[in-house]
Structure formats: structure tokens, C-alpha cells
Length: 181
Image (tube, rainbow, N blue to C red; front, side, top):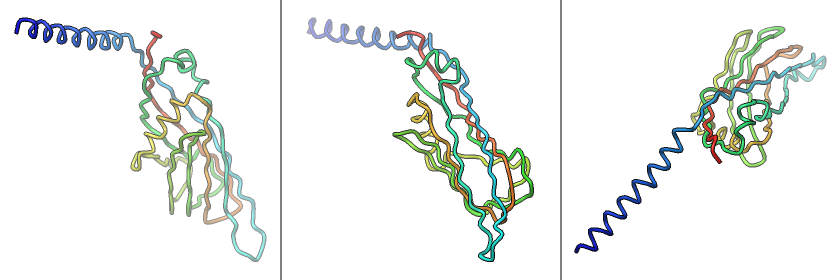
């Protein structure tokens, strides 16, 4: 019985030490903002035909997470990415239109996050919130943990042609990293 008590106390002591080491390491974790943005220029020329309005568009841009100096500094020790907000904001527009259908996709070679919008009136200042209703932020987290550039693609159709607009796509996140190897 005495040996069993010693064994139990030894296991208890070992678990406290192991747990304490993990918590001690977490004391040194650093958190930093990793915000990214890119602008999309959408140009839909006049259709000029009798076949109706052709107001479809497809644009894409690349975001490199290593453009954030803190992200680059801690790239090998990133523990967690917490997505706070993903938005698209109309900065400029030549005339107000309605997004009849639009898909925004963020992807890297192994993960993607997709949002779909329809019947959205847009004008200067319109903000489309890209939420987490279908786990898209979880995919965004995996994309940012991939530590490689990723593509943001916007495909859509508006209700009128001969329109130009600029959309600012923005990701706001907090990254947790360990300065220890």
C-alpha cells in the first residue's frame, strides 16, 4: 500500500510539473494584430448589343501574410490565428447597382472559404460583412496558418453595365505566437 501511495504521489507530481511547464511557456506567448487588405478594381464596360446586359465580372488579388513584420518574425512559432472580422467595402462607384449574385472566395492550395451574396444594393460606403455562418473563419484560420500567399477572388454579376467600382477587402485577426522554439 505504501508503494502504491508513492506511485500515486509521483504521478500526481509529474502531471503538475508537466502542466506547469506548458502554462509557463504560455506566459511568454505574444499576441499581435495581423491585418490584411487589398483593393479590387471592377470594370464592367457597356454591353452595346441587342442581347441584353452583360454585367458579369471576375477579379482576384493575392495576399501574402508575410508582409506583416510580426507574422514574418514569428512565422515558425505561430500557435493560433483568431479571425476578428472579414469585410468588403465599396470605396468608389460610378453609379449605384445591385449585386445580383456574388461569390467571394479566399483560398490557398489546401483550404478555402466562400461567401455568397445576392440582391445587395451597393453604393459608396456599402460594407459586406463576411461572417462565420458556415465555418468560413475556421477555414480562414487554416489558410493563415498555411504561411503562404493566398488568393482572394470575387465573381459576380450586377444589374447594369457600364459601371466601375472599387472594393476594399479586409481581414482583421490576432495571432498568438511563442518566441521560444
